[in-house]
Image: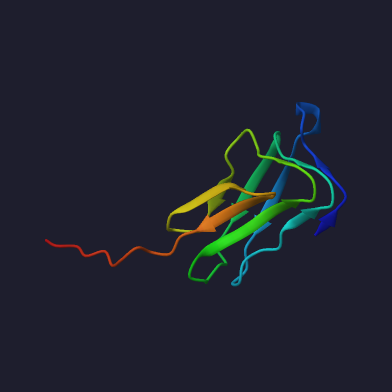
Length: 105
């Protein structure tokens, strides 16, 4: 998805973006200019993802990127995940399972 700019930098410009992962991941929103995400609500559904983990850019800015004021939500991924800025990208990192869980009774 490509846009010139994305401006959710004020309350009256707020909105919601839903990312739905398929088995391979998700497409990013590429902004040629600025990506102001301050008042954007970001929801991620990773229930269709079957990969082993990795870093997935959700937004990419050509000029500047400002991260959201509110942490995004993720559903459907049972392991650790984190959101963060990497250069001019806002990235979701999905961590694979860290080992086998053993239940001893």
